[in-house]
Image (cartoon, rainbow, N blue to C red; front, side, top):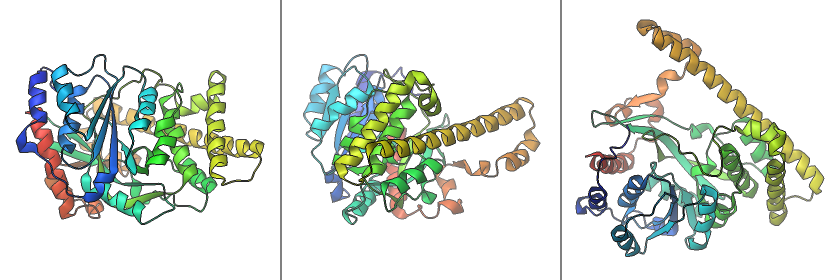
Length: 385
């Protein structure tokens, strides 16, 4: 569902400071966490994030690249809260992420899109895991997708399959090779030790491809150390909005094209050079630079080819699905899908009450899960009211 933008800013501001939506500090270790939230021309979703996290103990850094800043009244209200750092800068995503670095004071940092929801217990669990593992540099939990429907209900569906993703390896080469063979966007949303967040999200160059930005961030994390995967529900990814196009990169340029086309050669060379610099700074390899460059190029090219093949397969499946829908094969639709895509029926779970029926979700369906989800749904209902 797309947000009803006819709502006035006054209504949105009232939502932010509605006393009925007050949060509380449930997990003391969240006091050690900063959430970095970029936004671009979606300030109503930024405000929703602030309402969701207000009084929870986390520090929020809002990176607003919109065409205009929030109004003076709202800005004053944000400035009065020492847990909210509002930065207005009408620039690229990479530039704004770089600006966040000097404001990071907590031990841990996590990135969050303005319309997604991180869950408090999941974050707390990841911090706890990092506290107990001095070698790991990041931790992420399990994910679902959500959307707000016209019948005023929240639907849920399958998202990233982290439960089978295991990157805790002995060295950075093994981690990168594993990621190249079975890549999923895990590091993007992980809680990281702040120094690693600065080296990854906080240091992304202005490459032409948005996929290249994501992969740079992932490479920096995997070079630096292990990514832990924990079993609690951690992230709800939104289907409410279309993806935003960034000022400084193009979503249409795939990582494969960026890797193979000569016009992006210098950017790719810069990518590899930065990876080598991180390896050398950590003193985790004694190999000469030309060997490191060769190995990293092989891994990166393998990863981008695997991503291309995966996207091509999804596009072929979507084409088949679209054709079936147009032909109105209603009765045959599900049976055909089970042949071309056996896991298709697992993509859509239904409402909160339906989640209890999904056997594959039992590992995340705890009482704490339901408490976090119920608060999330209250925020969502209030937002669309």
